[in-house]
Length: 434
Image (cartoon, rainbow, N blue to C red; front, side, top):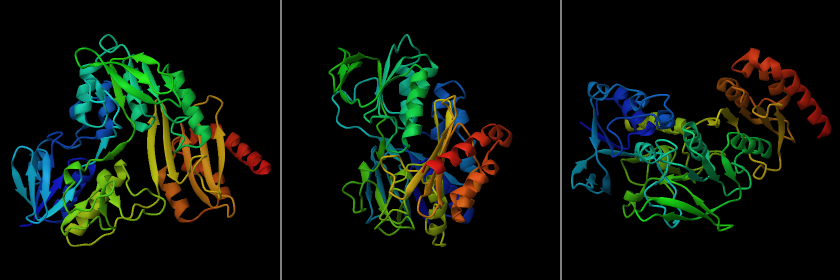
């Protein structure tokens, strides 16, 4: 019986295991050093905020794994010997495989800041980070002030978590506007205002210099690079992006870049070794996607894809049109297709932007100014249906068609009708001015 070993029990690894089991009777072992069972990483924030218990983040009952003959092993892999097909663990244990799937996900970036390993300094990615935050910031008496470093999606989630317990937050963002490398200026500026409206001390164009320790090795304060200002705090959240979690593979013959290098079949340069999810790096990016995609749904798709290949049906990874969703405090965000930031958009890309007077709802539609072809849409505070945009992108619809049919894509047509007339009037006026 062929033994498939999967390192990592996140969405990618678990999806691969489930689909291999559907397709075969291979022996399957999932290895994790983080938790006994798979959990939804994106739900960690809601545990801290009191919306659910940790066990509610587990999509499968604990009996699911034994019933489906999927073995679970706790431990950290220290090295991989691809010649003998053996994994060596930190505790001295070993495990042999026939096929290996590397699905080890990401780890928070650290940039060598003095004090970055003090007690009270943490990311917000692993279950252990949640436990650490609960220990150091259970309330605003134990944690009188927190500083978050890095203005991405994990940073805004951590700010919302701390805000839910009335813990004052200073948010250090090195860019001149929040997430302005991704969002067009109108959206980025709206989110700046929204963060400040939640009484979060947002510091733009601001970098961390160092983290200061008290006499017990705990966080006492941070120093700002630009001004030398010292900000007293009890917790520092490091949320300046993530990087593939692949240190244990350094020194192995498996080809590495920033991540584990893979082809379209998610194969590495070593036979019978595959990589999926956040830790995988495509040799050549797919379309305008990045070579590494730390996104939940692409991890799931890679798990489904690699299962087919391992079970004899070689299947290339084809993620389709780009989409994603997130939340900026209480504003929901969705993106379909490609809407580049003001600073990064190509010359042919033109934007139509509409914002509601309440400053919590907006849409940006991107289109090719030469051909009028619809390229993508961002929505804030207005929920849209994925399948409509996926269809319009596939059909290469022009922007006029999309605008006229936008109501069809809205998740709540009655809600959208309140804004439709204003959106279409704004669109017409902007075209006249262009």
